[in-house]
Image (cartoon, rainbow, N blue to C red):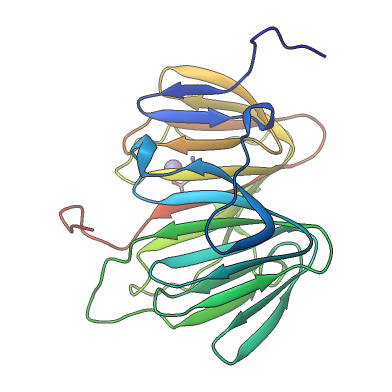
Length: 246
Ligand code: UGY
Ligand code: MN
């Protein structure tokens, strides 16, 4: 159906909501039979990139290294080769790849993965070259004592990591206990369900497949609506002093 120029997508200086009807696909270097939907990048003011890679059967993404990356499988099965290690990743599995490691991701059948990249801010300690994890193996922690809101922290509690990626699962009707305003920025990929997201001074209906970027200090709140839990994958910069330069 023709949308006559309407969309839920919104671009504001301190936030971005991108709904799937406005996604534009283009390959990135190293992709064969695969394409990317770049959700956010420094072109928008973010200090990281987040994109979804869509693999056709036989698709590949050869990553040269240079920037640390986090890959989270959304759909299908991916084979990840990094250094001497080969791993099979299924939906909700993920990996962290340090900037020094070239890697290759291959898909035998159609698959999708979210990729987050951030220039690494060094400390005296650096993260491991590579880490593979299963979200299903990580226990949910109630946020601020709310059993209806489970946070799963995907990366280790180690100051060497300069960003965090978590999933947050809201039972129907659950909501953040407060309007958050903080120095960290966020990339949020809605994985399931939906609800209402407050961003800045506006409230938006959101659902699975949407992407949201929140600039530092963007006022934010989410309440889940509907009959199934709402779940999102959330990135934030983490473990670094606000005066540290990238
Ligand atoms: O980790 C967070 O800052 C998270 N509670 N923010 C959010 O869900 N918008
Ligand atoms: Mn937040």
